[in-house]
Length: 138
Image: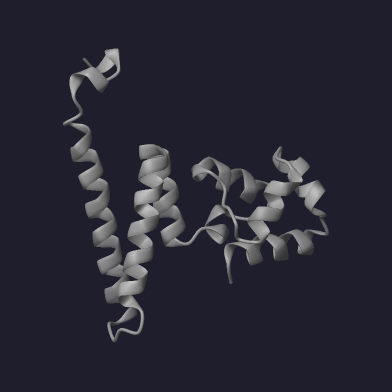
């Protein structure tokens, strides 16, 4: 079941219209429509949490492991971190397609690569030239 299917099904189960869910979340109706058609997702973990609260579900219902990784990357490293994480997930998912590796081994490998991505991002922060650092870090 896709993210959009989960949102739409839960909204229908609650008997809400898109407008009502949007008002409950504090967003416009178009945003709910883009969620339900899988054109966009909430920004960061806080956005997922607001949607989960509005739908009265646990945030884990809405998130896959990949979604959580991408949302965390966006929260920690901004837009570029999010795009890098999405690219990594998409490339790794394609790598596993049609393979004969056990599911738990694929999950372990995916987790290890995601961890390596986060460590690389953290290490790269150390080498930012001084002229680009905020004054508080100098």
